[in-house]
Image 1 (cartoon, rainbow, N blue to C red):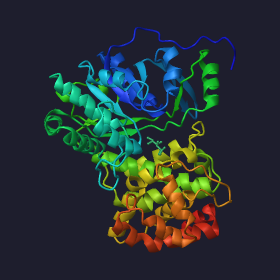
Image 2: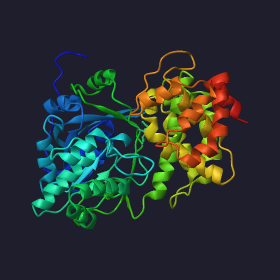
Image 3: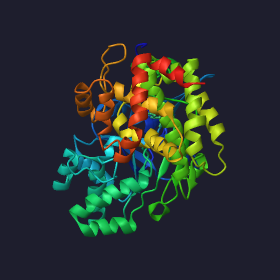
Image 4: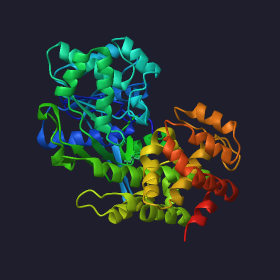
Length: 476
Ligand code: CS2
């Protein structure tokens, strides 16, 4: 890094606050915050964002000296475009000062709380959608006024707003979960009812929890990205985000008192029903991302672009779309799924995006159901085989054992990592398939019964042929 570069700083006065965001990771800073910044530039409005990190102080430590400004760098095959985003006005670290976070969320100037807390941040049972009341953070939040979990913050802040005679905020979840609005609403109502049934009734009547589909590929920022940005901009920015050109945000247009930024003016789609968009994106993008992540990792591919450049994996992902995923999807209006698949493949090929298979492989226990298992179940219902997706699940089953097909250890990150590892340690070969299929929070009982045989078969092929050859053997 060249010495003495000036530290990045905002170029204009901070906007007034209208939004609190929970989970200030790279994704939101490269997606939602960019749309919101553009909407303020285009149409005005007090939609400055107070970002909250629920765990680590790292983002706050990097952003505070820059007063919330950071560079979002678009990485296209034809070149790189940096741009400074100035929508974030303040960053708080929840465990350091939960009272400050609740006070901001209770401020009537805040009209929307957005969330990117990842699948596991909702502390729910994926199979039923109900909050996991045995989760230590949820148990804590039910017993204390100052919360720890994202759902706890939502409910305690809404409780304060009601007590002050105010209006609720809109809860806008931006995580890759099916029916994400209804899911977070159900969790909030369940917790609120345990605290105060009148609070739950008020939230049910007055609150709004729009569903969303969010899309932009944003790999985790790497140490050398900071140097790249310094070289590009001549500024020292310790918190840049790197992203692809493509972006999409489909939002159910249901906000408390209709208060929201003019997102429709900057390309977001405000619609009545997000469901078809959500299924398309979760199954076609995230489903193949996860399939490439496990199989690609086991085959020695470091990134999605490396998978897309390997003819065997390129043919595999196209096979998944054409033969196993699109046939059981209902397209959103005016959308051609074959075109969508072609565009996805071009996004995967983008050599400027270094999106690690290891990163996408994280938290598979929270991701597989909505990304892959639903598609498998629907193929079965239609009497079709889906060997490509079975092989992806088999690869996950190998991956979570913590040892690659090459005998090297794997750093498995997953809230269920210890339990999954334990099941794998006690079971060799296809017995592992049976043991993992017994984890009911991932695999519903019917699914486990119907898919035991094809998964045993896929697992045996994976371990005898290796990942790449097992993929090749599937292809015509
Ligand atoms: C990825 C997503 O990490 C993952 O699991 O599949 O983050 C993906 O890049 C985004 O959903 C794209 O919109």
